[in-house]
Amino acid sequence: MTLELYGDPSGWPGPAAMRRALLACAAVCIELPEAPGQADHAVVSRVRPSGVLIDSALATGQPRWLMGLLVTIRPPTDLT
Image (cartoon, rainbow, N blue to C red):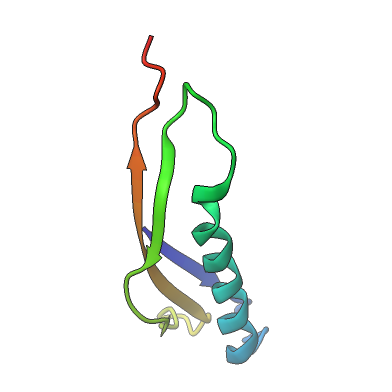
């Protein structure tokens, strides 16, 4: 899974704020396995980072940051 965070075309917020925001989003995703689930829904059992944060602006100059996550999902426990 790839997390992508887009900034305003004017360049706001700055790189440090975008980096912090993307790391906060990743932290929330990493906490998903502890979240309560439902028996009839797939379960996220593991989330971990798969690389580094990348500052990769679009061709228009709009800021964009990327980060990969490895996500393990298992099927629902109740398949009736």
